[in-house]
Image: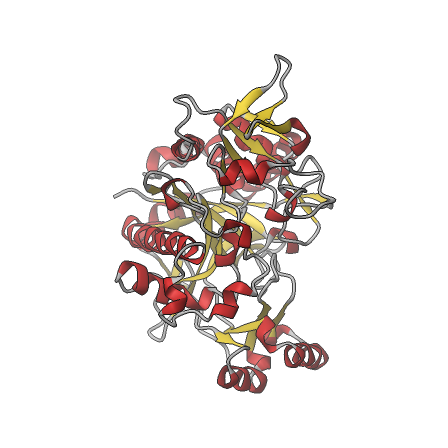
Length: 479
């Protein structure tokens, strides 16, 4: 039985959706050789600038891997203004509730006492940090930069509906590709931006810096903000360097920082300089060898005690990962109702939890139709896509789930929406998702757009860069 498809651009083989009409007319007039030349030009520039992604396969930002260029597709994903407004409202609502939840976890734990989230889901979570209990962070914000993965799939009426697939609240990456993809489109096709009212995204680094400064300790009027990177062998190093440069702040490694008299300093050619805010792209485990992993050389000894006393801000906060685990995701709609007294604007994908006996029974009976994920897995690893797997793969996964049911969740195989994409054979539909970035400082704000990832293999639903996915520019049309 073939599942219904929802294509972002084409309502049917002969009908283009209204918000794509202008672009589709333009595309139909472009000679094939011109578009082919533009594709080559884009690849050459990306290669020259060094916009790469190293592939190594773990969510925590350490380790090294092979560098590869993320393929860039010239056909943009276009979102009409009214759809964006409701998505933005839903994202602000969701991230606000998640920040309330993390604060609650490390303070009064009211949601546990009310019976909405089982205690063991939190206290046995590898990302729970007991060191953060009772620690107050500025404005009670833990995830200052959130990357929320959104997919669209046809509902029962065949209408495309947006769902949240995953919350990335620790060290979400990808925003540099959003900015570079836009720059590339404006360079290759300036005329398109004259004839389409595309909302700008270039001010993201300004909003990011404003967000980071907003949580600076009150001890200074002119806060010093730095980006902490694990170093040049990290998969997202291009992005760390890019954002530091765009914000006009220092990019530092752990060895550039030291603690003295309960403050953090960076070594500079002019002597030590005090640091007020650290935008860290290093996972919790590696931040402070005196508290977490003693062998880590990526962090700074003594950092946590300065942080706990309020003399430095760390973004995202230590312990934030407790809320972006796949085993916590099913409870987010409850959080929105519990903390905000509202119904969720954006729905979760229906999710079965291996820890629930009834759900487990359903999972076991329907493995061939489900996407099954390890709750701690990331980057498209540790998962089974039932319909695309062999009988042997399904049986192997069955044994793994039976051995550790609470380590897995399952979801129906959503038919992700498609968008026309340049592939070997010409232009063909390929599945996409979207990662908008939500910034939480004194207020919660976003730039209109995000990173659209595209699965380049025919029929594939895996869009992750680490699994060979590409990216597209994301246009939000202004009213």
